[in-house]
Image 1 (tube, helix red, strand yellow):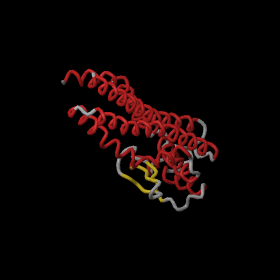
Image 2 (cartoon, one colour):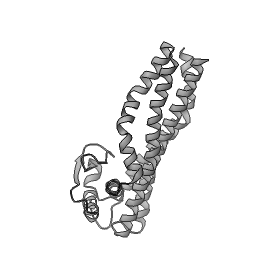
Image 3 (cartoon, rainbow, N blue to C red):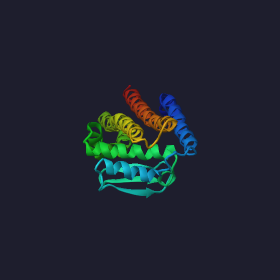
Image 4 (cartoon, rainbow, N blue to C red):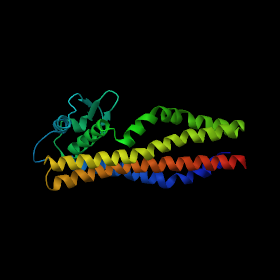
Length: 228
């Protein structure tokens, strides 16, 4: 039985290797450009406040959150949270990350389609991620193909979420770089440096999508082998 399940793990190896590379890439890239400080001297939180206000998003608060690269925009509570390593930093890396999160806030204001769709499916995706594997393996253990199929369908929601996340994240980065350039908050090579950071961050989402797709394919393989 162990060999039966373990043999399908080979499907995950390429995606897991890409995921490891992507995580290593964003860590190294952010660390490198965290040491490159913007000539204008604005901190990431100051840039975020400036860009939010210019977009008419005066009601969105900026909060400091513990951790490294834990930055995110919370659409439900309308709060933009910047991590300890980003909040007060004047580096091009931190400013790029802060502007990226502002990009999400602007998406929310403009009802950007992929973002609205992603936010809508979050409850279903949470259920799917929590119960898909349980139902799938219960189906295998109990010999109930209907349960394994239902587990696969639930996990498909997780894959859909990852796929929709890609345009949301890439669009937020594009908005961030465009605004930073147009407002001359970052100048010359600073824009190029910030772009490298955001591109590296974007690859982590690509990697997560590949892992999810590989997991889905593995579930299908396991289901088919179990039926045979």
